[in-house]
Image 1 (cartoon, helix red, strand yellow):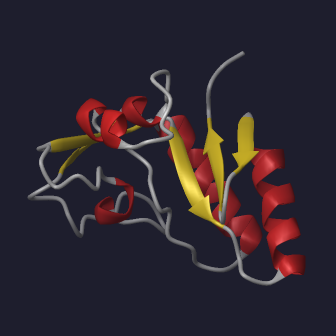
Image 2: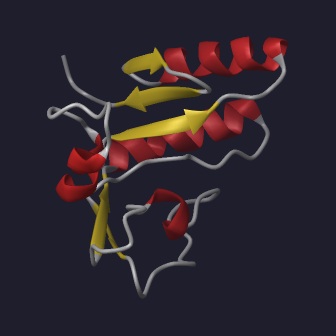
Length: 123
């Protein structure tokens, strides 16, 4: 598990393509965020295969932040650092390719309104 100290590690390079602020909880209240290594590995593979930058809209969420969101599951993998919501490209052809890549890389995905949720839950 990778630990991000939200107030200190903001610009720390967590992996080749992602910095701490892109993966941390967006609530602004919690001190630390967690990111599972398996999730980050899949995220990096997707970034390399896709070949273009993208910024996850939500990766880690503290329990309080997760509960505050209207459609968030009580069993969400975000508070475990094992899930992320990734923005879909605006062009239809690119959107379909991005979805196909994500679904081939992550063990679990579903498509939302303008995003794809990806996580590394184990069956």
